[in-house]
Image 1 (cartoon, rainbow, N blue to C red):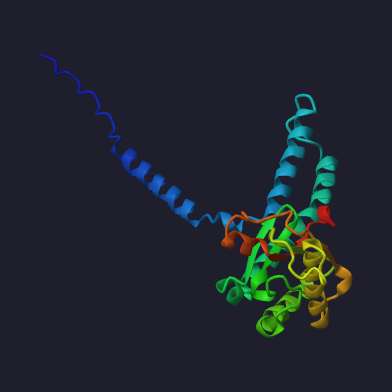
Image 2 (cartoon, rainbow, N blue to C red):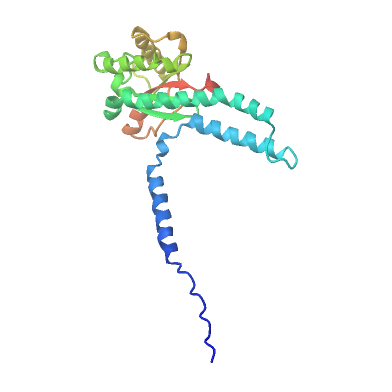
Length: 242
């Protein structure tokens, strides 16, 4: 009687479980490394624009999957200045975070980015008495010196800066000095620039603006919200906001 041939055993799939667990752990590890606060808005906008341009050029060429060498060369040349500017702002943000660490810890300064560029916000209550445009120089001299040092950095050469004054919605008490919050916010921005210029910055790179209470950071319904709204924003401007 002939023996029946044994069918080969199916390979075990147990390894797939281990492999899946490893991939999941690696994904979790890289997600933990990702820090959204380090994203530079200028660089992100540049990448987005580049991808949009690439998509448009690719689909407009019939069935072609890629543009020609000359078109690529033109796109690369056009994108280089924008990428360099974005890299410059990213480096400036890292330097600012390090340089102003003591001021950030004491909540005198916050550093953010938005569509205008890199924004260094001075807590007005630390720099000015309420309703006043006179800088509390004894308390803020060291901070102003660091600010002037930062704005004279070689990487910021050729950049433009804007100092914006903001107030809460509380009416001005001393109307002989300031007719309204408009004058108060502009005077605070102007005095900030004067002190920075005394410490060495180039006034020609700066402009000033006063916005009164028209651009609140928080609600004016609470004392804490009004304190946030009384502020000075010093902005390293993106080229589109000169």
